[in-house]
Image (cartoon, rainbow, N blue to C red; front, side, top):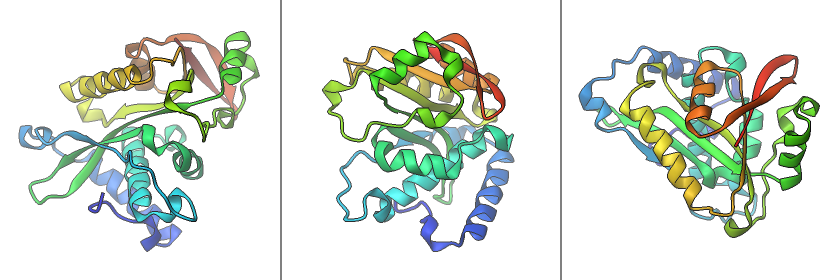
Length: 229
């Protein structure tokens, strides 16, 4: 994680400018076979022990920013991208369930080109989804459980599975899907999985993850598709 930028080193305006510049660079990247050969996931699975929580850790902050950059690079339309504040809130609790997929340039720079993330949610939230999807009008409903043992996780929300456009329909996208399925096997107690998506690529990944379209929901005025397993 040392190679990623610490967002605390920049002002908010400078950080936004840096993100947009990096997104532009990633969108214009030529993915050579040599670059694709370096494609691999990065995780932060260790327990962060800091008086101010996860955000007090520079390692966590770098991982968070890499995840945000990967998400923004995967979705051209800003409306489809993860909200900075919401992702930050989620990852303070659920960082262990996220992966950032990167390629490494010949110069050694890590390029976040894909991400996947899920987290445990309360069973009653999933039950409400199944009974009446129309009552969901805010993604804030899907907040992660903070203190839950792995063996007690029964319901989960698939936050994101995405990859930059040039790598869609490639072996790299297949690797992300296979990794997600292996991750799910680590938690045999999970019986219920949900997701909400607006993009065609998100729909494709949801289908590949063995989820089905359960209905339409309106979130902040936008029509989105709810997926359940």
